Amino acid sequence: MTIIETRKPTAAEDEISVALRKRYGAHIPELASGADDILGHLLAHRSIRSYRPDPVPPHTVETLVAAAQSAASSSNLQTWSVVAVEDQGRKQRLSEFAGGQKHIREAPLFLVWLADLSRAERLAKREGRPDDGIHFLETLFVAIIDAALAAQNAVVVLEALGLGSVYIGAIRNRPQAVAEELGLPPNVLAVFGLCVGYADQAAGEDVKPRLRQSMVLHRERYAPTDEIHGIAAYDETLRDFQTSQGVAPVGWRETVLNRLGSAKALNGRDRLTEALRALGFGLK
Image (cartoon, rainbow, N blue to C red; front, side, top):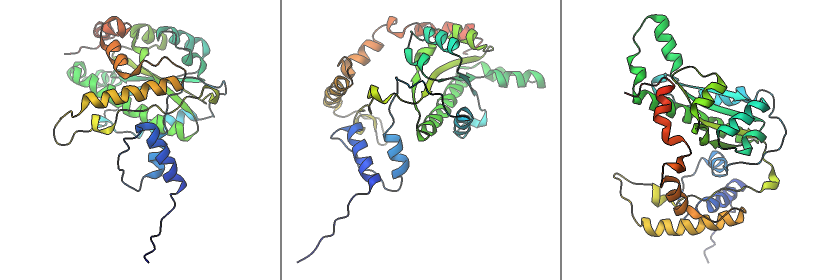
């Protein structure tokens, strides 16, 4: 008789299996081995919108910026900056600019990530050199991408420290008001905010399911397959998740269609181009 030995999954493997089920439901992809610790950490990511009043530990900001500065930067231009906001009055005003989101007020730390072309502009002026390239849309793209890469590095580390966060895109609702509040010079845009703090566990915020990988992964050429069925299945999964979280079970289709169906749904961001010009960006 042949005896087949079965290996009991390690604790890390078990945690990853649970996290994968939360993220993908029944459509769990086959994964390579060797990155269990970091993958389990990433799979457990969730947005936190309810915070305890406890302050973040000393030197948290410096730690997060060290992680952020270790992200890739296009041509090493380093076209981003971040403003750390802890003053309650300033958080209150920024919350108002961002549609009154309470978690901006409640989180002990609010980071505003900036696409910052002003540093390069000042360098060129001091050196008496031309700065024509600063005023093209491509350069603003570079700065926005740099800021996003930097912020995500910071999120990975803050979660390793036991903290939680949520991105705030609504900081772009009123970019000129935000710029005035933070004292931003021309050619600087607040791209998004990031609430940081200890999660209020009583809120019960959980890992949000995502589209199955076959919906977003294309090999060699873009080729959407089984999109109708995949979206329908995900819509049902997301409605169940929303119900479990005590929010209206809107689903994914209605969220996308409502969010992109009209300029009004952009909450002021439909005027972003004119705001960018007012903030000094050339956008050639």
